[in-house]
Image (cartoon, rainbow, N blue to C red; front, side, top):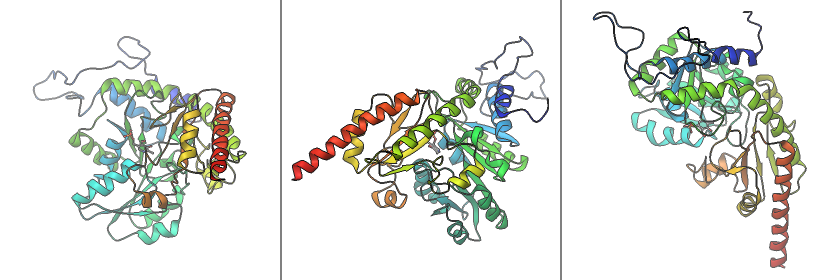
Length: 395
Ligand SMILES: Cc1ncc(COP(=O)(O)O)c(C=O)c1O
């Protein structure tokens, strides 16, 4: 088939594989940890599921094709994928990482990798001068999360890749928020794409999973070695669930992103909302750059209320979203980053990362945007009334 097919067609093409033996329209769930070898001297393609399994492989092939890389890898969680990727580095190596990186990535860098002699510097990756100044002779990786969690800060992937290449470093991109539907970092020159597939790719809040895609065979061989050596592989049933999630990814994330745009615009009109962070808003820092490297503002936004008390009131009065850790599901998910995704950071570190005490993150699901906006408008009424009560009691 021609290469000019649309991404939504490619998504189905890569995830529906008719079983040659039975004609089944779905990849079978090969629940087998081991595989019989027919020949004493020559072993077949599969021998043991940690090293390779046909169901997991179907998922790994699909994500590799969708991200446009040489090979894909499925892990037991996003953090398993990210940790394995950082173990491409050795003692004495250094990584440059966004200061507002996902809390779990922050934790592995600050509390684990340092013990093995892998050093890091946190920088504002939206500021290329800061990135360049942090490069040392032993820097091996520049790590990017764009848009970042939870302030949706936009980093120029192409520019970082250029800097990295000039200094013989690799570029890793956490593409969880955009997915390959909206942003394909390997096409922009990155070397490794990482996902918390727990989020949009699974899409139903029912799987913990991670994915990685390497651009070159050379890097893929190294990732494969580590995946097999460390063993944090994705289980077979969860691999199948991710394949199922992938099939509807395009429609799910597009509908959620359309609603997110409307919800973000609504929040900008509300006096109780001090700040709205969403790359689809033209006044969001880096929105033009984002539009050059991604096809949508995505389905996640953050907004800032006056303080923790206002955030609490809002959360206590919304009816539709679940109040939970995580994002990227059919149901809208509201979370409070200071106590959830970024609880690993102390107050000073949170302050530096722009995570104020009134910040809430919203992952927009598949509910109707009008219903969501009505729900949020109602919760904001409570915030407004609470403010009045507080002011009155001070009087
Ligand atoms: C941007 C980002 N990267 C990585 C992770 C870690 O993924 P997991 O929870 O699947 O280990 C998360 C989880 O919230 C995330 O939001």
